[in-house]
Structure formats: structure tokens, C-alpha cells
Amino acid sequence: MVAKCQVISLCRSLLRAGRKYPDYNIREYTKRRTLDGFRMNGNLTDQSKVNEVYAEGKEHLEVVERVLKVYLAYPPKTKNIMELKVQ
Image (cartoon, rainbow, N blue to C red; front, side):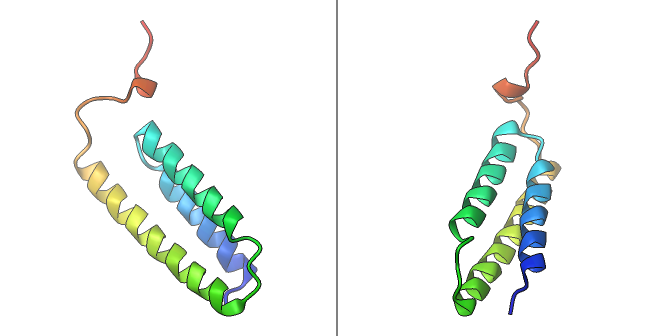
């Protein structure tokens, strides 16, 4: 059984991991995807479905953290247009 505090903790962990990306587009994508997923599944009542979706969210968190490590190890050579300073 998954408690409400565990679900909130998972959401916060996903948002925190997404904020660590240096690229604006990836940061915003992870934020949007996380919030949309939690809003979409916020009204689930069947406990087996809640457990299934929670496990899927944990897998997504592992993927986000793994991709972040690779992204930080091999950063892109060019900056995003959102991150360029206007001269």
C-alpha cells in the first residue's frame, strides 16, 4: 500500500531531479511531464492501480537520474537559445 506522503515525496523527487538539468527545454519538459502525470492520476482510488502507477513513477525517477548523470558528464557544446544572453 502506497501512502499519500510517499506519492508526494515521489513528485517532489522528480521535480528536484528535473531542476538539475542545465538545459532549459529539458528542465521544463520534466516539470511539465511530472505535473501532468500526477494530475492525470490524482483521482485513482483502486489501490492496485495506485501501486502500479507509483512503481512506474519510481522507474521514471531512476531514468531521469540516470540520464542526468550522462547529460552532466557529456554536456552539449552549444547553448540553448533560451540561455543565450542578449547583447
